[in-house]
Image (cartoon, rainbow, N blue to C red; front, top):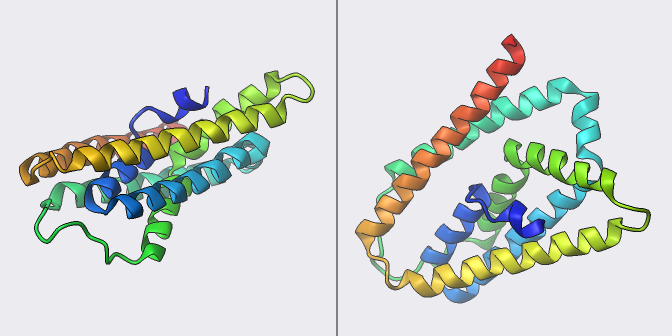
Length: 195
């Protein structure tokens, strides 16, 4: 279940792929571990009750959809406008605190991840037998660890075969997908407000 929840291409996956393509192997792996940390913290929080908070305060869900939709569109536009460059090797000088903050943004400030995580993981929690919480959490966390690290390793190893033009078009394609995703969040907000 954890792999099925993580595998669809989303903000976190794109972040891990882009990081692996633009950093050394060690930095790509460190980045994926940061994403794993934020992903597990979000998953456990959703599992244990973020849904209750959003159900108790419907305005919070609206704020998350609105701000999240705008943020996601902004990220997508940035990807479309950015020309990929492989000149000068891989970017090893990017401050690691910046990577940690960006991983936090694509995980915790992603309203769709919050909503999907709350609905999916919260619904599974309701169906678990007594004592099933810990095995479920361990399964989810191991899936996160395996998925993001495998994605980072594969992207980093295959990255040498990707040229600048391919990488630029991959960024643009991802940017379009992310903009559509942000527009969907804003559409969901409008539908929630106007019925």
